[in-house]
Amino acid sequence: MIPSSLPSKAETAKLAANILLDIGAVHLNTDEPFTHSSGLRAPTYVDCRKIISFPRARSLLMDYLAATVMRDVGPEAFTNVAGGETAGIPFGAMVAERLALPMTYVRKKPKGYGRNSRIEGLMREGDRVLLVEDMATDGGSKVSFVQAIRDTGATCQHTAVIFYYDIFKDALAKLKAEDIQMHWLCTWWDILTEAEGRFPADTLAEVKLFLNDPTAWRAQRGFPTEV
Image: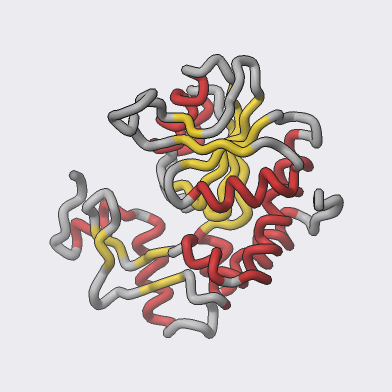
């Protein structure tokens, strides 16, 4: 079913942030910071993969994501929806279902055998593709996925995510330079607003310090500041 209505952007962000908090997808630990995939330490971690195990939560979030894209870009903007390997694959499938469009997925790198393709499923030259992922940090992986899509002769100018960090100052500029526009439901700032009372005040204060300047936060605590 194609969702036809959507709360305002501010209300959508609030609802999405609360859903992530309610299902335990938001993790904060200032005593033993997490190691992210980059190898850098942080007191924050959002596990969007958890969404797939909560049917009502995932249904609402996918409705919001599909409707957000249609509101921002238009109902006839796309002919194909691609999920990014691996976390974006289930969400890409669910958004494609809501938009009544074919679904494909994009590998992080060629699989090394067979056709050695990064695209799985049917993507045609001239397709207008929406890239769907679970989250975005600095935007780097989006550029790689979009390039793989464009290598097929399809176009891809939009990516949609459930959660966007919104702490890396050049992330959107990096995407814009590649002619990519990103759409999202909520950010760390939305989550922190809704997290009041759910976590200790000193934990939230420490997390705000990190989000405002991750490099300085790591340096002050003796963690590596780059990989």
